[in-house]
Length: 305
Image (cartoon, rainbow, N blue to C red; front, side):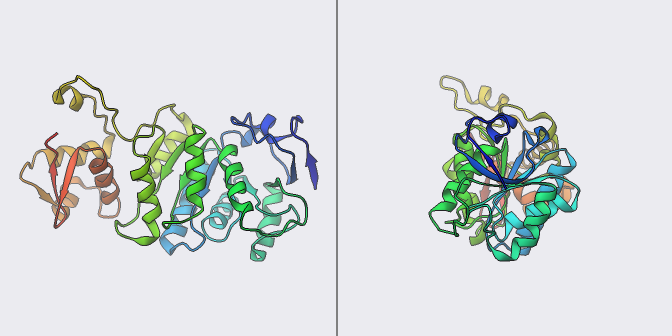
């Protein structure tokens, strides 16, 4: 175990150039390296579905294959899968603990923690021997949000603690990606509530395509605005010109626009060639951005505005 004082050259604040800084002494096991700068946090439910687990694994795989370190909290569920996937695909991963450095929680992750120390680090801001206490985990989440440059919210129910991490990441100016699930699924309710609550925030994006994450790993633009800004005094035609759509969104939007009386989901799937698995997330993005309207029976029309 290494004790790292705040302000020391080997503190994550210095090595990773964190902004905002953690500003507290840490205990660490393993290694924190300059290559860990720009890491991606992967967070979510402790009780995920199989789909959520697969999502977490794919996000972590995409991150490490693009040279990014995966950061998470070693919790059961999404966190654990993100760490495992990063290691499986030859990447580095950092686990921020909500316990003392020598207390691995849950105990089932003791073996995983040993692997992380060989290919990353365990870090804790709590005194050694600190047991798992509920009030410490939001503090841990704050540190995760500070250590990453971007964050992916994989799967979160309405009261998931991972929502705290995602909110803090936005407040710190980090990029936040939210994975979509089936609308109405209570295990994704936190994801959709988060999107609705922070829909005006820049740096917020729906992660409906892993190629998007791969591209952003290399470019990391400063503005990932999900929803178009409101510009007073401009005509509707001028606002329409400012609506920026990516490839998949543009394909779907153009098809819907050509069917002003409405088009059903199945027909849209066939015409777009995107596939029934990916299409709902693209449609959700268009609906939230006000480009299209969803009617009962999964009928989609171009918005009048």
